[in-house]
Amino acid sequence: MNLKEIVLDKILEQGILPLFFHHDKAESIAILRTLYQAGIRVFEFTNRGPEALTVFESLIAARNLDMPDLYLGIGTIKSVEEAQQFLQIGADFIVSPIVNPLVGSLVHEQHKLWIPGCMTPTEIYTAQQQQAALIKLFPANILGPTFMSSIRDLFKGQKFMPTGGVEIEMENLKAWFNSGVCAVGMGSKLIDPKDTGNLFENTKKALDFVSKAR
Image 1 (spheres, rainbow, N blue to C red):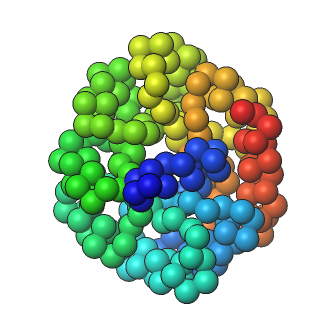
Image 2: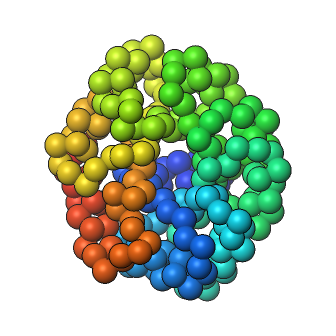
């Protein structure tokens, strides 16, 4: 399998894609290590600040040092220039809040996974035309599981992952998985960079809930 297929399989197996941004290298590495110790093997750092590139580079270095089976992706990528920067330093996959076909082409050329963000059937169709194996439904708290249920038959075989407002609650997770998604993205509901005291326990809980909610 190529890297694209490996990462996709890891996301599907894990059932959850944790994501966060922090401007501090040491704090970011500590959060990543906690997630790893709790069982996370694929993770998304978000491009939400000017420090993102250097922090991500430090995460790659930490991963290479003692977390070799962890796959690191970068999110909030909107332009080809952003994608190029992060791919050059070793991003395993690219996540976007939008559908930019040029970004998709660049990522595909490197045989890596591109996860575009969609909010409408037209955007989903556009992403499909660009061979998006996994599509992010964003923002999930606005769309809701009923949206996924409504469009599922229009896009049979397409894999979806809601992101934005997904809760660590069995009822919420069951609603999403019953609607037809294959994984969920989880940011601030799981990771609060200002308060990481319960991160290990919350990550274990999220993984357990996802396993039971499928």
